[in-house]
Length: 165
Image (cartoon, rainbow, N blue to C red; front, side, top):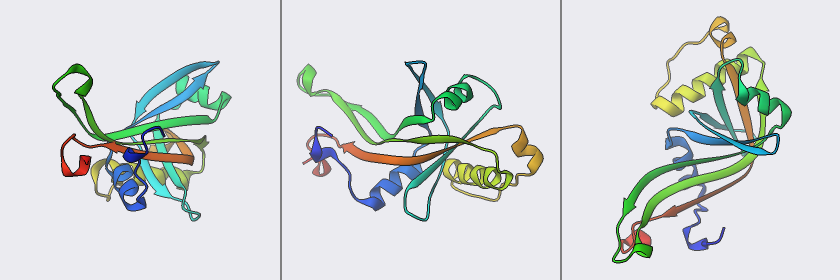
């Protein structure tokens, strides 16, 4: 990370950002070419503390074909994004908080894990639970699991604010 003063290292703040973003951008490599797609996600932590992100989608298509060929992935997510103005062109910018990470993505086949992942996805997306899923429902979607290997977070507050000094 080039601008260390923007790095977020507080685990609670990182959790807050990950649990409150609406979507992520999933980056894959398709025969040497980048392929990025925005997706909703659900999040949890493994017993060893690493993040696990769950994604869902159709049972066929380019994304799944690419994942089957190359399970390496990256992702970004952001929140509180807003432009700000400056006195001159180089002083304009954006405020934000963001997460960037890498990991391995696998396709989930276990029905119980698929059901749990959809509960996590709905919790992350709606802020509440109580949704019901059965084996038939999960058979018509694919579930992708990212075991996060590396994660960084950063922010850019509004210049001149207390958080920006």
